[in-house]
Image (cartoon, rainbow, N blue to C red; front, side, top):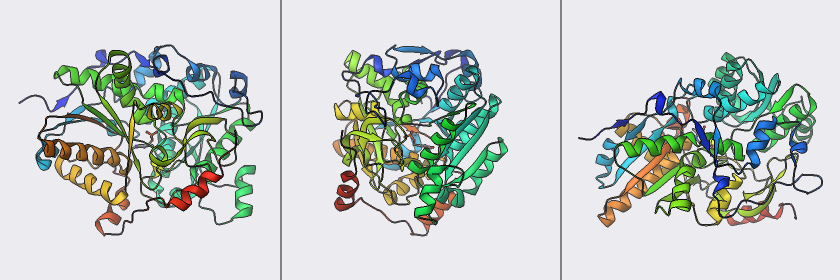
Length: 451
Ligand SMILES: *Cc1c(COP(=O)(O)O)cnc(C)c1O
């Protein structure tokens, strides 16, 4: 029998990140300044980001060196394993070969630490003392707290209030690493106070928390802002996923017919898929790239492709992306990390150009696949990651139906050990699906900025 767990040694770890901006047939249109509506320049971003990340954001160099200090920290959990899902294959009685890249081994429990460490490093190197950020379900807040701690930076996290109340253990984790975790909307920022005046009971949203974190960073000289997904430099840092996975598959003479990841802001999809997109664009490989999103927040499958703000207050630059409108308030599904109105401009452009594709799934379906996966492979997946699992299960069943061999690779972006209350709800039959009604979609899209 061939290998089940395919490992790389530290010596085989990627030394450079892959930048897809070097190879895309069409780059997304440039980000626009929220006031002037002109393309943003480095000067506009300097109050909140270090110069090195601003350069990466617009770089068209194909390979960007991973700083040695970042590589050293990566070695705590990287290279992450690639695992052949033999028991899932058996359970599905499929001729397909299923492989998953497992990012739950990181100290943060998800892929997010790959970019958090890089971002903390560049901020430290440019003299920044403190980072401000937002977090939805808490995974990004945990990852940035850890990374800030590694580099001796202070960290303030605005956490969406509903999650702050419902996910106390992620808050505990942030506190272990010394971060200051604040329920958003808060009275500490004018954007938070503005929301609370209108609705004192507001449970917050990612868009509101971003406004608070950006305002915090702009108002203090020693503080920068950090974003855990969406932006080009985040996609760049996550490319270690696909670079490692491609190496690992080559070790067992395998190459995927389809690469799958869940998609919230797009960073773990970008991470696993972009190195294969390179093969597809530059070398003509026949690989399919599938982004899996919730049908309650169907940005790529039903959103509008155009300019929109990244936050509710309209502080951020306008990004060229698929969006449901910045005012879109997704229902409280259990995949907090996928509840964002927009998507990475790079992922959006690739979907628009037909290089990648997108699928949307309801939460009862994804939890069914999550439990099947847990029972087959043992790992309890994050609800977000379970969208990718469900899509992989569909691919495997289609292969069975067609009686054809198919090699499937998906990214298991994180573990679900802090999401057990969601599993309780599923097992008790309490989960509901919230397919977005056409009317609500029209309403949300009517609010889009006119550019
Ligand atoms: C945040 C998160 C996601 C979604 O974010 P992307 O930027 O789309 O990758 C997916 N899975 C896990 C485990 C997460 O924490």
